[in-house]
Image (tube, rainbow, N blue to C red):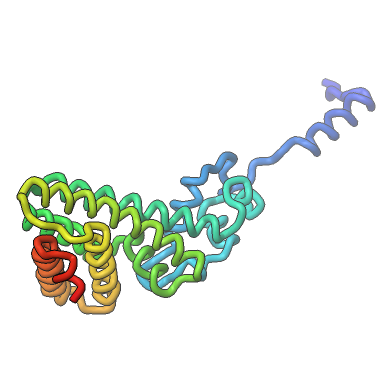
Length: 232
């Protein structure tokens, strides 16, 4: 039986069509989202690895995309780093917010919030470690991004302090400053706790709870003072 052959023109067209037809790349995704790239970067991070040590090619390889595809979602690695910090802040605020919602009394709000925070630290949570590390050792741009997330924590805490003070009829001096003092204290001690052995975390948690209660007790007492008494 004679073999079927194509006329010369049809054969040329078929070969040309085959040459330009896109070939799937093994191991690479056809469609990629910002979330895919963020997740890939998170998988590469650890307690002792900074965002600044990640390379674009490394993140692209982990995400299963070509390096050029990265730029469809992010301008550069700095923009990815800020997205990671924002996600870390939002995730932690949600967890602590849920803990505060479950607590009713002032003392239990303090304990529930700090225990939730320290539990994330104990679980070796990458997002929390990212916030702690970039807030103290990151670039200036990364530190500004972390400060912005901390300001969200402070504002939510301020609202809680004002609500509790009103419900309990206690004084409250400079709610925003009080919230800032508590937030910065907790993050500073948590950053140091990452260098401690795991068995020391329980005592650190109790110490932080006592320190925060001391700040709350002090601001309540100052709230009952005159401005002259406070300033002298």
